[in-house]
Length: 157
Ligand SMILES: [Fe+2]
Image (cartoon, rainbow, N blue to C red; front, side, top):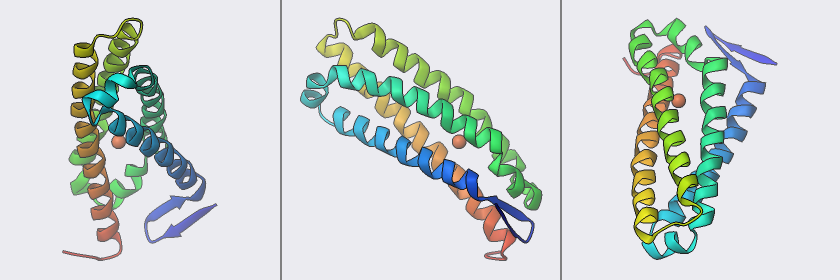
């Protein structure tokens, strides 16, 4: 069922998928942040950390595919052409972010058999850098959508 508001069309099924995906993604990121928050915790949960990185890779594949397949920017762009460049830049970040999580997950899988203290700590630091990039990406997407919706309903200038 679609709800039409002005020039924006919101697909209810899409929103439910996005919601479910976000719950899963936030759960994974939360678990990974908790485990990597302190070196002793990380070293004691190295196997779980490696498994969660693989799950995060798979969830992000779904997350990015969902955003791109349903193209929830598209409606926003229809009503806010000045945001096209930012939307394209953000969409292009998906492949870079996905390459990074694949490399991270692969590196973790290689270490899984015989992880050293140093390698696990290094992996935790790399995850934190990736996590920050992903947070920034998501924040910019949210900002873009808010601006587009704000323009559609006449909020701001
Ligand atoms: Fe995205």
